[in-house]
Amino acid sequence: MKLAPLITTVALTGFLTVWEAPLKVINPALVQATAQELSVNQKIAAITKNKGQIGSGDQLRRFFYGDLEPIGIQVGGAGHVVNLYNKANNVTFSYCSTYDVIVAVKKGKITKFEPNEVK
Image: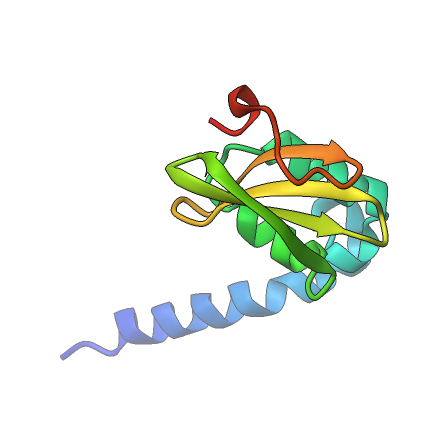
């Protein structure tokens, strides 16, 4: 058994793991902004931009963990969607749990979206 490939793999893994910290110091713009660094309007804009894409539901949970109140269920998405209201920002998100996607975003407390918005 040769140790050279094993040592090379471990060295490269360590190097790549340690690389991110100096990168943040050298050029913070190269590192993606975290949820805490975004304003509320930027978070809502990001979710709106990514609606319909798999994982946008995860993004919603990261940005507004504990701040969402379910206010309605309606037909849409891949069966039914849940309308989640954010009281602090007066925004309603329509969430399809089958595909973990946000299918609609609207200002105000919306208990039922138009059918064409949540398809």
